[in-house]
Image (cartoon, rainbow, N blue to C red; front, top):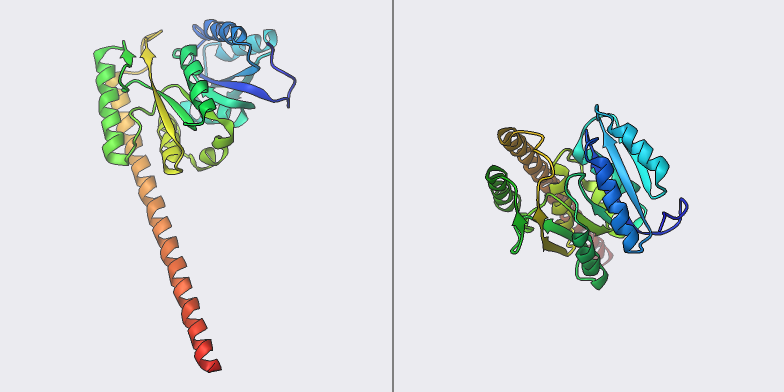
Length: 271
């Protein structure tokens, strides 16, 4: 099924950030289109090119011209989190799923749509740490994921076992969450899940199957340093928000007490 005209309702939006992905973008979009057409869904694929220097944008525009279901958005600077947020904000589908050019799985989509349809989840994550997950990445990458997940759990109180990777969510739930998300880069993923948990939205986890389709873009030590700095920034932001909320509550409580005292004074004066 091709995408309906602009403004028409869609069952599904696939958001696909793309930074220097000219080698994989064509095959990824082709595989997604083939699989989604077989499922007879009304859908769109939103490719969010961001800061590429290798012809990714040119290829994305070519795919957009050839395939009615493909939309291309672009950002001038390479930033995964900002690109993902842009795509989520632009999505028109009732269900919105985020894939990476080198990490996507239509079996996850099938499971996630079922869980969302059953009403037991508002956000579905593909977790590399969930029981039954198959993570075939190099050992160093798996260890980094384990340490990062532990830091999120004990440092930020994240209940989900993994915040990075594929996600599916009802578009109706996205607006408020995205308004509150301010982190960029890979920490956007983490903040989105934290915001969902804080809002009381039910989060379901599906065991992920991970196979690297290309070598990592950055060394493990660099990813570790970036993650630690990002976590520190996110933790500081959450502490500031908690202090503001506590201050607002104290002010509201003080205002209520003052109003009660004024009412009592008026009552005594009337007596």
